[in-house]
Figure (cartoon, rainbow, N blue to C red):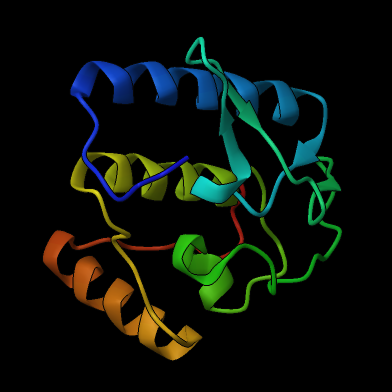
Length: 141
């Protein structure tokens, strides 16, 4: 998908509904995508959204505490727990990325751009102070 222009709210709603339905399907089948971003979302001529590039995907069991790497997901879409180095996570990392995509569709640019983890983490800290966000590190959804 191209995010350099604003989408109409109706389009955003349609795309997000499809993205969340696709994620729900993956998660119900024990798959974390772990690299959601605009360039990994494909749109056909009928407006159908497809999730692509499962190269960083992994299987998961929400009942298991199997450690996973925190070095996944393109930096701008990386969930706070991953920026903080968590190895115990779940579907929340994909949902965070979906939220970043939602914001990007609405404003036409990434909400957490940064060249390094520190830069992105600084932006997250700024936003978390604005909204008083508190992150629990090892309580995956």
